[in-house]
Length: 183
Image (cartoon, rainbow, N blue to C red; front, top):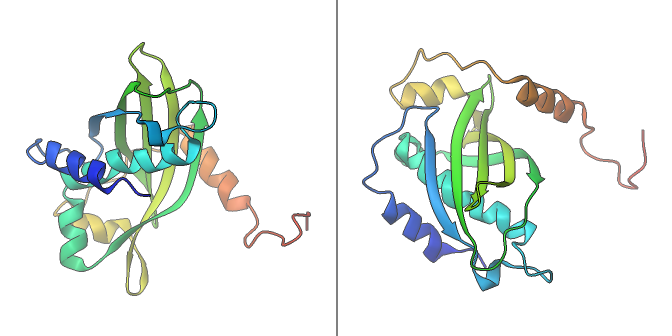
């Protein structure tokens, strides 16, 4: 079940936070609850992705994107993700989440998020490719920036690891082979 109450709490908690620049970092704090764990008593990998929503959506609000999406009747879709899990998060552990827009290209925005344990260790890190969508498909980031009142902003240079991931993902066959074999 989607954590609607937790999302509402995060939106309420950060409602008066100052606006962020496009590539500013939103910091939020979360607790691993009993229904977030798997059979090994640690944060479930699927729930990790859901918890990342709880940082990404308030980030979108703080940069002004939520208001633009509502006014324009646009949506926000995740078009790809790559996640690294490195440290366990156990029941009742508190984590700090950091969320930010890294860069954008002609079609997509690239965001990164990370979860940090109290001991200073990074538990997981994720890179997303996201798209704003409208009735005619993907809305180009330049048009989104214009709607945000930030037209003319050049995309920050993409880190090499982001470019490498985008290239590798573009080379991946789509649709995948039905039998899982190679072409």
